[in-house]
Image (cartoon, rainbow, N blue to C red):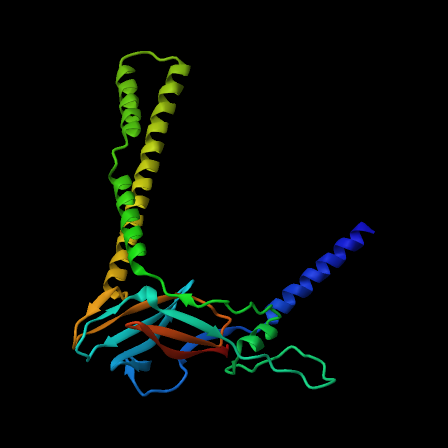
Amino acid sequence: MLSLYFRRLQLLALVGLATTACAPTYQLGMKPARSTGLFVEGREQALATADSVEVRLSFVCYEPTRIVFEAEYRNPTHHSLVVAPAAFQYQATRLPAPAPLAGQKVKRPKPLPGAEVTAAVAAASMSLPLPALPSRPIAAFDPEPEIASLRATADKEAAKAARIDWFGIALGVASIATDVASIGKRETVAQYQTRTSLRDAAVTYSFISAATKVEHAAAAEVMQQRAANLQEYALRKVTLEPGQEVRGYLYFPRYDAADGLVIKAPVDSTTVPLEFVQVRRRK
């Protein structure tokens, strides 16, 4: 009876694997909801204006946990304007799942390769649950705390890489001293084994210590580079004087189960909406 139970479990597992293997996969993309004919570096920009201030937004890329846009502000007014990335938000939207006809059995969708589908259809085709939409707007990341954190981490890693390993030095000195002391003397087997073990331990520890220092140095370099990239490319809080403009990257948390994002860009005490659609293309 027990063997029959395990056979059934194995059969269910195989069926599950087969179902997963047959499930379609999709490539995500993002574009303005309405074509503007405005492009920057090959990316189409959404456009909005408020009080003569022009805001342009284009989709850049997906990161593992973030979605990246580039914002562009132009201030033709006669007053200064503060642009703060932390004031950006988006509201996720989704198209309803197609309702089955009366008496019709609900079937698993099977989109053809190259077809664009909604989040609901994509989830149904992969037999996955569709998560609820966020109940509140999603704010953009403020790059300043992240830049400060990356710098602090880089400094700590660099300090660890440069730290003198006094224990390793002491172990090496002890090993050398033991070898020197053994010159011209007849050692017992136990003494020879102890001296050899100490030398091997000193060599092994020196190798591990050097490798650890290299790891810390590499980590420091990675953190420094990430901080430098954010400093150079991220949109940071800035005051735009009349006639000035600014461009920079905005980073939002990803939400793949949306069909659209309404991004609210701050302009003085108000916001302007810039609408994007998120598409899924069957691979």
